[in-house]
Image (cartoon, rainbow, N blue to C red; front, top):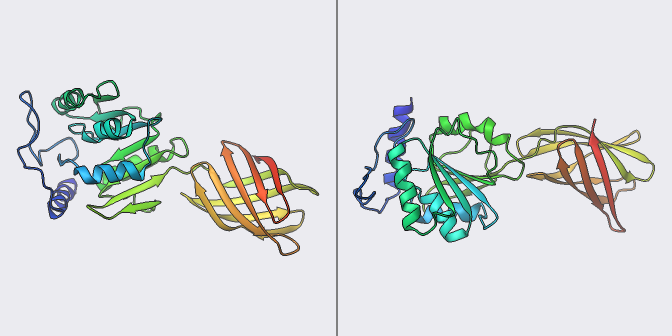
Length: 278
C-alpha cells in the first residue's frame, strides 16, 4: 500500500510541474536524487512558492518554534527562519540528508535559528512546536494525528498535498499545489458550570465536539437553549444563544484545561465570568 501511495505522490508532484532540475540538489558531500527512497516515503521537496504559502497560511513569525516532520534537505525549516524569523527544527530519518540540511542552513546564514536532526518523527518529541509542517503520505498523517491533537491548543499545522481523513482542515491552499491548514482545537466536550454569567445563579453549558466542530446547549435554571454559530479556534470558543426575552447574546470563552474564563456581549452590557468542568 505504501509503495502504491508513494508512486501516486511522485506522479502528483510532477503533474504540478516541479520546475527545479532533477540533479540540482545537494553539495560535494552528499547529492540526493529526486524520488529516492526513504524510511516511509520517497524524497520530493516542496516547491518554493508552496513553501511560502504554507508558512503564510500558518502565520509564522519570530515568536514561533516550527518543526518540519520529514525535513529532507531543510528547505522548509530554512525558509521559516530566513523569511519569517522563526526558530525551526527539522526531523529527518536519513542521516546524510539531515547533515546536508544543516549545511544548507549554514550556507543560508540561519544556522543560529535552524537545527536539522536525524531522527524518527514517531519517536522524537516535537510537543513544544507552535507550528508543524508535513509532506507525508496519508497513512502517516493519520498515524500522527493523535499526537498532533494532543498538542497545545492553537498549534498550527500545515500539510503539503495530503489531509487528515475526517479531521477537516480549517483552510486549504489550491495554488501552486494542494495544501491543508489546521489549528489544534482544545478539548471542550463535557459539562461546564459558568459562574456570574446569569445574575440568578450558575449556568450549565453542555458541549459536544468533533475536532473543531462544537454543538450543545446552555441552561439557566430549568430553561435550556441550543448554542448557535459555535466557532472553536484553538482554546477560544465563540457562540450565540437566544435569552428568555428573545435577545441574541454572544459568548466568548477561553479554555484552560478544566477552567474557563469568558465574556458575554449583549445590546446593553459586557459581562465577564468564569467556570469549570464538572
